[in-house]
Length: 310
Ligand code: 13P
Ligand code: SF4
Image (cartoon, rainbow, N blue to C red; front, side, top):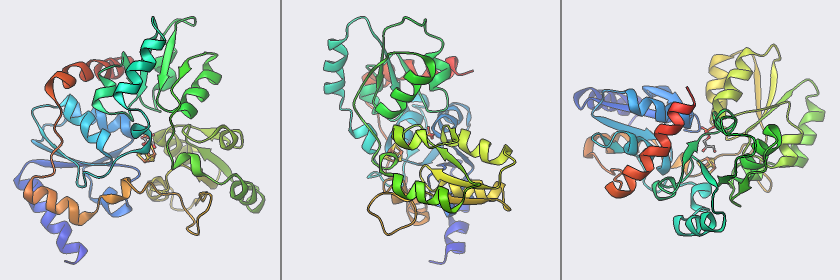
């Protein structure tokens, strides 16, 4: 089917079924262009609480669909490809995380949103990369805190907030893969360029960055800055919106180690396609379902996050 025909069919179905398409910035450009809303993981969660649609098609990875379902249990929530997982969420199994928490009694548990519903159910407050600093800052300086599962984000927050949170040893395979060699070489090639990095990147990359922030923060920075050339150390899907908002600026993706391709894509995010969105709207599957006992526990730390990030 031609892309224009596919989009026409998607448009008819979403209208007929009162459905909305929510897309993360790491989706392919064609999906971002047809979405009813695009955002980072915090914006997607906030939007899930506000929309009056009956069906949410979450174009992102599984935990993003799950977060939307936890917040909107009476809506039908779908992710176009159920295999869209997340290596970071996978690095933190609920039973292992529970044992880790038991090893650190009296600690408050802070979990990054990149976790399963079962891990969120063990958590006191969820954070995203956009609000992690703001939320951690609301705890007393001497509070005993556990932070999981991203060790790079946790280490970065520890450094900037003068904390000593106990960190779970997990990471995102995409953000850990940026080639420092290529970054240094690109910096030489474009000496005027500013390096923008997501805090899930390794410390050595963050040390070379001019600005560190969540996906949304990097987009805002690039848009508001007077600089015109940027080297991007996060999933390259964000460059689509950066370029759209800033047509005269230049955005260069930093490549991963061991790759012939010039950019760093999350293969899970890229499993979603326009075809799968169409199939998903037509057949109303695959649907995200969350065990109710887990959901009632998992919703509390997410609502706490939404409250603390106001
Ligand atoms: P954001 O919170 O910046 O949207 O990041 C989500 C994510 O999956 C990063 O890899
Ligand atoms: Fe997970 Fe990394 Fe992909 Fe984000 S980029 S969804 S953290 S694997």
